[in-house]
Each structure stands twice: as structure tokens, then as C-alpha cells.
Length: 206
Image: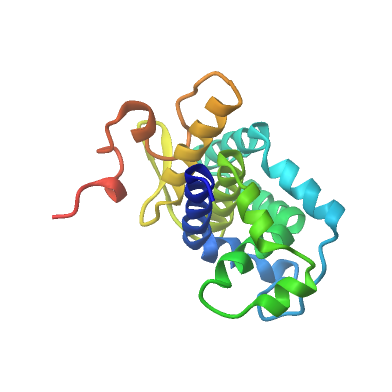
């Protein structure tokens, strides 16, 4: 495996582990849980999900919506957005969680029932996929009760690295796609400025 692929695979695992709880937080809305029956995601649907998560515009749109709702205090719209994400992308997020879970427990049967090759999925993941996973998981996390904070007009969620993982991966995604560089609306400015003091989660531990 190349160094790039190894790095991407490692980042994918780190991201899903950070997002594991929020990604499953609203599963009861659509009765999608790890303990429930596994439903096959056909190859066409899986490829469509991979393509959708590979788009920078998807992550940017969700970032704009989430930041806007947090800043305006519109919890109702944020909750509706989270429910829409769970209904549309919950099955794919569940598959991604299972892929990482297999490193810690035997979920091969569930993955087999879903007709998913976990290695192929993990290796196809790039920064845009990571950004789309992170931003969706953040929406679920905030809707489930995590308290966002606004610092310097940037939305952050203290106690998790997920907001900073999003800022990092959307920055990489935009550079790969040749898009104009933007200041993040969610997550630390560390990737842009090199100054990570804006987020307590990134502060050096005593």
C-alpha cells in the first residue's frame, strides 16, 4: 500500500472513530442501528453515495447551512437538517462505522450481508469524503445535544476533534479540486494560519 493510501486509510479510521457516536445518534429515527438487521446497499447505491461524498460542494453547502443555523440559533432547522442527513445518508454512515468496527470486533457477517468490500471502500476515501463524513456527523452531534461555541465568527464544538478534522479535510479537499481557499466557518483556523490557539481542544496539554 502506498504512503498516501496508508495515510488516507488511517485518517478515515480516525475520523470514523471520532464520529462514531454522532453518526449513530439519530439512528432511531429510521430504525438503523448496529444491533438491528443489516440491509443490503446495492452496488449502484453504494457508488452513488461514494460519488456524492466525494464532492466538495456537498460539504461546503452543509457547512454553510450548519454554521448559519448555529449562529442564528435555529435549532428547529438544524434538527430537520440532521434528520434529512440520517434519512438520506444514514445507511452509508452505518456501513462506514461497521468498516472501522471490524478492527475491534467481528462484524464481517453484517458487512457480507450488505455486500460491501470494506477494503475497497476505505481505500477509495479521500479528503472530500472525509470532509463530508465529518460535516454530517457534526450536524448529528449538535442536533443530539452537543453545545456549539462561536469564536471569531467560527463555529466549534468543544470536547471533540471532529470540527477540526472537518476544517482540515475540507481545506485539503478544496486544494485538490483547485477551488478558491476559504476561511472555515466550522473548526479551527489552525490549518490556514498555523495558529491553533483558537481552539482549547488543540491547546498543548500541561
